[in-house]
Image (cartoon, rainbow, N blue to C red):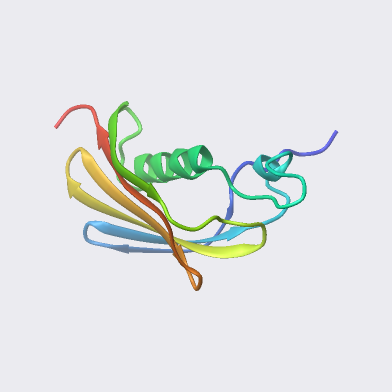
Length: 118
């Protein structure tokens, strides 16, 4: 049985006050590339959002909070296998995290995650 790889390899983490920057290696072995799409695999936006939520919970100790809303969600450029991507998380308030995915190809996705509670 193959091991399912569902998360990128975290190459580096930089924490500064209210900002966390993660360098992520997006390998071709991530299971989410299978079937999406066979001839030109891309990382689905729902996966990018899920990762942003997961890392925001982990980095800002929000594990007990549910997501209340996602705001200003934008997808600019696709993420393909074997990419080095930067995920920047900025805590704007106790319950609001802004995220941005970018690489040398430009901006990939961004949005604001609003967690329950203040």
